[in-house]
Length: 363
Image (cartoon, rainbow, N blue to C red):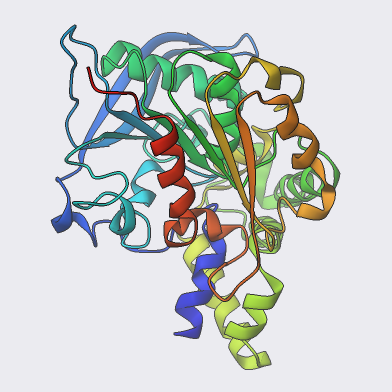
């Protein structure tokens, strides 16, 4: 059980529960693709076709005017995919009958971000010639997915974990009238700087310094560089207290590390990893927070090494959000560092409060 608990620490990048464990308790997920021709990125680059993959759970419900009124958008973390949310840990506590995001009531949309999952990414052929996408590109593409493909002109809730939490802030000011409520988890609404940027830059540099990377033209994954990059990833998502409890001996710690590295090696591509870690380079909602109109609950955990509360960032930033609230979850035996963002059993009460606060009276 110690190792299975330790796996929760890596929730930003990989929810290591098996997708589908809770599927018998809610409608069968449906996957699809949306092709965006000649998509233009913030960098000025274009792709002849940008493909966005997505998963939906539940059915859209329309009001008398034909507008969809029950859409919930949930965005994943760096290196993840929308299907990561189809786990007992997440969906099993939210999507089943009678739960907060009951899929019989809500139309749940789980996009794969640009560069992730089954959406277009460097490893699909272009390698380092793939456009240098950003979080803004991800949000624009998801907005087009909802409005042009799925027919959603307004969302009941936009939420996300880690990278998805940062995208949630961008949604809030870029499309301020689009949603009833916003729930960013494990994120800060400021430029990626300090230790956060240093760790990301070190991870990228370690891959690119490996001679086997070959400028992105490798035939086998550059294992030395990728191993170094994973050190940054693991450090960022770890919780010292919980890792000590889960692996209290050298043998347990090294065994847990070996299994984690093996699992990550089997799922990550070096070029994709570089793009995914660098996509946050121009993220900075701070100048735009006053433009956010929807009620917003920002939830972080006190043992999050990516967004440590001692920075004091959120206390200042949240005051600029007209209907914003900051919730800092205290360290407990249930919190698992950065990966707490994917444990709704801990923060679900605040989602319930946000949904109640933004519930519109029935006509």
